[in-house]
Amino acid sequence: MAIDRNEIEKIAELARIRIADGQMDDVTERITEILQMVDQLQAVDTGSIEPMANPLDAVQRLRPDVVTEVDRREAFQAIAPAVEDGLYLVPKVID
Amino acid sequence: MAWETVIGLEVHLQLATRSKIFSGSATNFGAAPNTQANAVDLAMPGMLPVLNEQAVAFAVKFGLGIGAEIGKRSVFDRKNYFYPDLPKGYQISQFEAPIVGRGVFEITLSDGSTRDIGITRAHLEEDAGKSLHEDFHGLSGIDLNRAGTPLLEIVSEPDIRNAEEAVAYLKALHSLVTYLGISDGNMAEGSMRCDINISLRPQGTETLGTRAEIKNVNSFRFVEKAIQHEFDRQADILDDGGTVVQETRLYDAERDETRPMRSKEVANDYRYFPEPDLLPVVIDDAYIENLRKDLPELPVQKRQRFTEAYGLSTYDAGVLADSRALADYFEAVTKRCGDAKIAANWVQVELLGQLNKSELSIGDSPVSADKLGGLIERILDNSISGKIAKQVFEAMWQGEGSADEIIEARGLKQVSDSGELEALVDEVIASSAAQVQQYLEADEGKRKKLVGYFVGQVMKLSKGQANPKMVNELLAKKLV
Image (cartoon, rainbow over all chains, first blue to last red; front, side):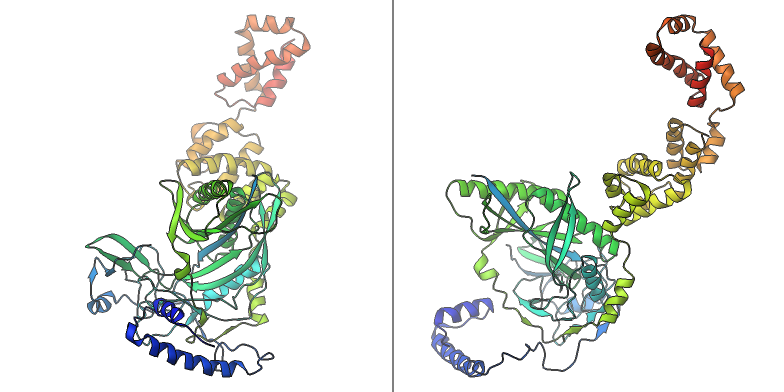
């Protein structure tokens, strides 16, 4: 499976990764190599195998519905870049 | 052209757990910002989610409530997108294997007819935090108290055809989830939020048109208005030969319009994949049966029982069974007084009237079910008339005590003593010579009307306390 430059750009945008123009060809080539390996795996007949959600042969342990956390806002906000009125401040994003 | 509206609803329901879905933080509404946001909710490095058992149980209860298939092996997935109120950069949700599969939900419309609305699925996920875009020197403020609150997203089939059906569906859903006790259903606090998928197609055709999605509508009235507005907008476009663009829109209640929110193509590529931090959730039949055993009587069953056991009309049964608290109240009144129809009438007219006027919910009623039942007992045994009973009810509402205490203290007991009544009747007849003359000269048909005057006078003289049936009998005997 081949991947073109446009798709790499789109994926990079979705992942919020900036790829410099000069690196684009290199990145495209390396991802293509990975996809070739995926192609090899795809060739295996898996028709009778159930999709695996997790490699561990185990099921989720559940916890009782109990509040175990206390308010530690001060400690968390001490390491935040900007806070005000108890809120974490971030660059403005509006839909 | 005549257009048919096709609507599917996605409801995000906050589940009434004490702690969050993947962490032990509290979920109380209205806490100071970020005081209920801890390491897991803040997506600190190395933190791992652990699933809340109660959230699973609530989701299964919902599934049982709509007779849906329960996903015995459900899987959590990551839904990837970037937004500051989602610190992990992904929302833990369910995609391929939700906990609740297909089901059917019956709704009742205002004309009494019923319709089945298909439920496609319902899945567990975590809520995001809140962004505040007010003035923080050009920055946005983030409150992550809500992040990680358990949500059940309930997705309907595109079976809904108009605003009335949409509202009926939401009201029925609200009633169901509050009966089940899995959510407080408080729409004003965002416990139940609704996304509306709406498209039009020419009447009589089957192919679906291009839809718009209206996000986060949070009241029944806004749902109705948003649908009406969106129908007009899409019909205008289509009538002009244009095409509807698939997009996400917001309903602006102030301006009563919808407007586009964000461009779809980038925003909607969520790249779901299985959440590696959580194992598949496996539940067995014993677990499901245990929950089924504890299901309360549901609204549909209760309505049916109210019509069959108490002989109530479908409408009355619908009003009274709307909330569990109201239904329980009505049944307690009925049990005390023994007459379901009068109880239904008093609860719906006097009690609900007063509650609405005072903006109180049934749980805050100053008149208990037992007290109201006691009042109705006094109507039934002819101690007081219905008219006096309303006075007594007012007094009970003001906290003046039980019906008997108020009747006693105010001397409101109906006069059923024939000697006493006879004296009153005689007094009225004696002072109404002209009316008596008129009555005696009238024919049978007219007399029936004229006797009302005398009854009225006797009631007035007795301050409304005379037993009307006995007064009528006495007058018939005396006016000859």
